[in-house]
Amino acid sequence: MTTIRRLCCNDLLDITDTTIHLDMPSLSFHMGSMALFPEYCLVVEGPGNRIRGFICAYNWGEGEGKHCEIADLIHIDENIAEMLVQALEVKADKIQKVYYVKMEVHDQQSIDLFKSLIFQLDVLYSEIVMRT
Image (cartoon, rainbow, N blue to C red; front, side, top):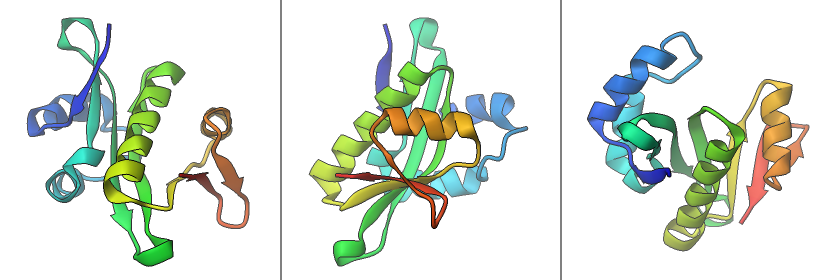
């Protein structure tokens, strides 16, 4: 059984050991995101309180250009990624009233994953966009 909850500072320290080699934003970036958009910083815990994935995002723009941009998504498998993205999408749509969710991806595996989650690929900008 897995649980989705808000990301806390101690989680960042646990995650850093396993993700330091990845192209991950800095800890200070995550701390700022947690302070400004705590509802967009989520972690999935599995049995034994082991972290199985996390997502961190922020709002950008105003009016019709207001959107949620996923800054970081680390996951063990596609089911975890799907849970995190769907939870984020609900919060972005219902709480913040954003027009779309966006994430830049660079590898084919991520592109395929987000297409399976009904995201659209914006080839012009090399971004994945989900209309809310």
